[in-house]
Image 1 (spheres, rainbow, N blue to C red):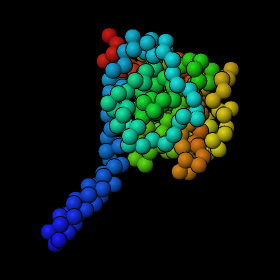
Image 2 (image 1 turned 135 degrees about the horizontal axis):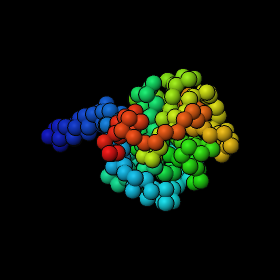
Image 3 (image 1 turned 90 degrees about the vertical axis):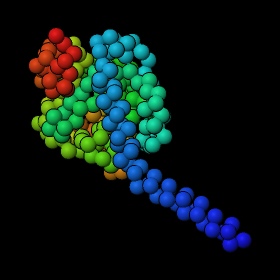
Length: 227
């Protein structure tokens, strides 16, 4: 009887140890996997892959967007079907991420996802959504640190689009007008605020459009993709 009890207590201790390790290292592992997704997507980008992404159908059902968790990240790491449309960079907050088609779990576990099927980089309103994580340098978390006047860069490897932030507010989740297209050329960036109760909304107006060259692509660390 005592032997069985010792075995039971040993198994229980082992289980508690594993659970404790998972709880302790859960966030660092999640952050590492997300960073791996980001890096893999950026490293795989080509003009052909962007064309394929533009021709693909993304997922734009807002009701299916939930909080990011370990299972979603792990799944997207092993089977990431998100299509890359380009790259976004905000140097002031050290943010460089792939831009992906739609709002699927795979897309939002890797970078910023487009919010409308008809949006075109450099034209009208170009809205992107991304997850906020406790690691302030991951995904769209750095948006909280942006300031009015910071520059936002987008590229599709044909051009580099430069925007200047002129709007930053915490809004409720029902401000869908932020996603609507506009005559003014702008970028709109959305992520969670106040623990998911509200949203950070950051907008910038288009300042310039330049050809994608070694010089202009340095901001994204993509200068090796052009001759």
